Length: 440
Ligand SMILES: *Cc1c(COP(=O)(O)O)cnc(C)c1O
Image 1 (cartoon, protein in one colour):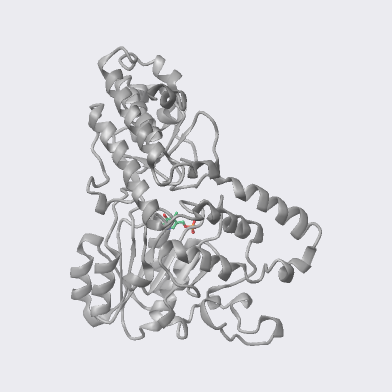
Image 2 (cartoon, rainbow, N blue to C red):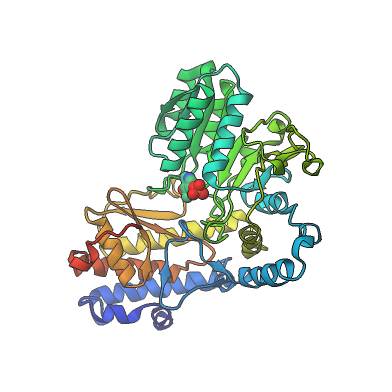
């Protein structure tokens, strides 16, 4: 069994790293770990789901939190969209193939994965643009309030968009770390309009408690907006049950919609009638084909739309979501925790003592494991050269994402062995790994 597990990935690379052949002590530890991992893979509820993806040979892909892998179903659907829906049926497809209804139809399909009942999610635009709509919409739902809270460690676009929306709406931005958010919410009191946080930190993979921050915001009459870029598709989100007011998230990370896939916007049912978002494009109009001179928002979440969506990407995302068919978010979360646990456990067992930026407590982590190393950039390059694709984040983070639908326990253990080999062999000191390109 352990032999199979090794064959499955990059055995040959270990041949070059002294200390890791099966005859040596490290090798026995690794063989044991691989054997247990193969058992876990064979018995996991998500066993076999990886076959729904097209993945390259010889690669352990740990960057699905940045660009998800290709679900095989997407290829066939995009062919049909190009050759039949567009090529043959031309403009008739707006009605025949319900291109017009795609943003809300796909929003409903996605809602199942983030705990949102139908009619509250629209798939459209980028996360940045949707966050802007949510921020301005929140300011208009809470007129007279002057403060918005957000995380100083947010993904930069969230900070940039929040600052600009705040300038437009006359709000003061207070950057307060999520661990102190509840206290800051109470301090702001009835001047608080919105608490806007990510559920999972993109850099450290730390998961924050959606419910307690949302409840604190509600206790002072404010709203809560959640960025789900690093949680949607990897865990239960429970937007409705958690009382979230607004949320945004990404289509091309764990949801595997493909490069540049449209993002999504959630507005809780109770706010929809009053949700007044600032980007009043014709696709969000109540009667777009009357071509009237003034704007009237559509009923429901369709008012979150702006202009003509990128249908090829949109329909690719719809096909990608079928990779979740038959899976419950709780099963996906269980697999995610099991695989990240296997990775952390293997690092420990192999004696890799890099500091974890990600909490070991499973309740407090998302689906990635981030390690700190002073030469993190070069370590990541050395891992990529071995076929282990993760990414670097400033200033010292080796970020490894474990997309639960296609990263196996065997992948996780092999990845840990590669980390060990890169560190033991000081491969990160090679000059070719020091060069930073424009894209990291
Ligand atoms: C990936 C990510 C984004 C991406 O924004 P786009 O506008 O879709 O490029 C935004 N916010 C967070 C927290 C992210 O992780």
